[in-house]
Amino acid sequence: MLIDELLKPLLVPNDKKIVLIVADGLGGLPLETGGKTELETAVTPNMDALAARSCLGQTVPVSLGITPGSGPAHLALFGYDPIKYQIGRGVLEALGIGLEMTPKDVAARANFATVNSDGIITDRRAGRIPTEKNMELCAKLQAAIKKIDQAEVIIRHGKEHRFVVLFRGNNLCGELADTDPQHEGLKPYRSRYMRSEGQPTALMVDKFVAMANEVLKNEHPANTILLRGFAKHPDIPSMYDRFGIKTAAIAAYPMYKGLAKLVGMAELETGPATEEEFRTLDRNYDKFDFFYIHIKKTDSYGEDGNFEAKVKVIEELDAALPLVTKLNPDVLVITGDHSTPARLKGHSWHPNPFLLCSPYVRSEGFTAFSEQNCARGGLGCFPSASAMPLMLANALKLDKFGA
Image: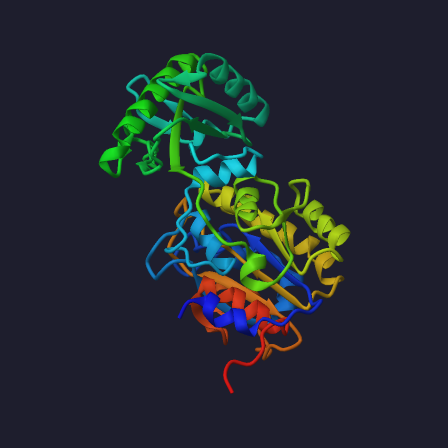
């Protein structure tokens, strides 16, 4: 049964507060057999104390064995079927940096990257160049490339190595495959169309990449670009229309701002540090029913294979957590959108640790928030899209189903 058809008749308006903290890529793996994950290694007295009066479980964003991207993994946590609502990453990045998309636009998420003299990718993120360098390079690209064929080209910087390219013209197709092979040691792919009407757009993208490579050829380490997540703006209902709640997002990175905007969340300006995000929650606590707070660096360091740095970010989250718990939200959830084990240096298919605290949970008495305890928790292993009904129920926002 569709979640909308089930929940809409049951929705009960009230003033109870839900706080969803998403530590991106939280789930991990031990570096060696019998060792501890990043979460289990971190010293987290506040989350451990919370676990003792919470219920625990594990979430699966798409399906068992499927490694999700950040887009579908987040949409699932927001209560959307990630298979029904497939959102291109380019759209999320474009919205996240404030670009307004028209029906004529195709957006792509772009990375500055490094290739060697043979055209082989040696670093997909160009050493995570500073945002200031990104701004300089995007300005240089935009000055050199304003139009290709009959399409306008709009280039805007993001953070570190990330930026956005918007192609605006008639009859453009968003169904293109990535030029980013997702691994070092390979050459970038040529643009490939998923259906025949996409051929002209794919050829235009290849022209753009060739022009960008010429502009960047002496800009080591950012001497090439990789494109992914080509898409047009989708039609997706807001969280207010679906769940009757006023929602707000506290996120520092463009993609996650874009995700929030796409589902109708208000964007609350914040700094990148976890403590700054939690103070933003404090300042705006009376204005909304539901808060989504995004912690990015757990994922970044996991992708970098930096186990120790990921542990440190988890400990920083734990140290700042009293700024949230002092507000005494009616429902507090701490989880990840997906797992990003440092051991694998990327997203993985492993279920995500999930903690839900409310006055109405069956406390399980665990003494730590960890993958092992979550695997034994009473919530079991469940689809991420079921997290939203769980949060609504524990906030007493759902009435009884049936007579």
